[in-house]
Amino acid sequence: MADILLTGFQPYGGRQLNPSAEVLRALGGSSIEGATVRTLLLPCSFTAAKDPLEQAIATHRPTVVLSTGLWPGEPMIRLERVAVNRASFEIPDNDGALLLDDPVDAQGPVARAVTLPVGRIITALRRKGIPARTSDTAGTFLCNATLYRALAACEQVGHGARCGFLHLPYLPQQVAELLDELSQQGQLELHQRADLASMSLDTMVEAVRTTLAVSVAGA
Image (cartoon, rainbow, N blue to C red; front, side, top):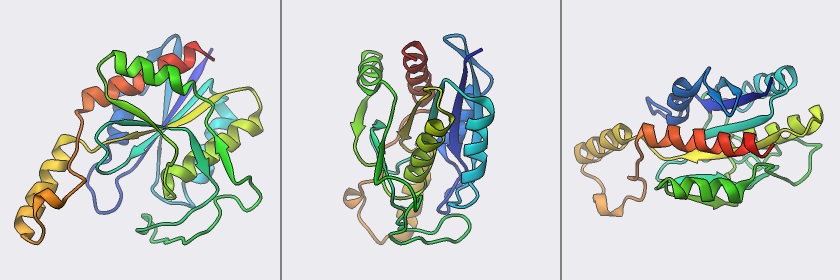
């Protein structure tokens, strides 16, 4: 029986929500193209997120591994194509760690390429009217580290799992709260902000469902 492993993150950086966690809640236990969606909510911790991710991949040997996370200000779905062996944080993780130019894996390669059918996924998303683009940088925070580790774990299991990462925008209520905060602070004009884009949860869920369906069908 084919399995999907779908991961997301707990809130971080003082935010009360993480859209990736909400997507997990919506899709956990569902069936996509005959594959069962298993979900794994990861802590926003460079250290604590490693073992649960690697153990889930080794134990369940999923056909597809898709990790998701927030990219604040992104106006659309963003499908990553590469993970780099670099951890360099602009803000601390939830454990207070502030890594600076450290490797994700001291013994690993400089970069790893995703194994999802990226082109077909982007085509499928746009045909459904979902704005989506590819990206060659997953950053150097926990999203990148998770993608790098997931690709490595899939290689180690060695059964040809398709693995990748999808970045999500803010939820509308997050931007509403941000606008309230900015108005109260009165320190920066709204037109100077570049992080006010959002997307409905329903659209995000459909984007992830479509990504998984295309990936399972091509596996």
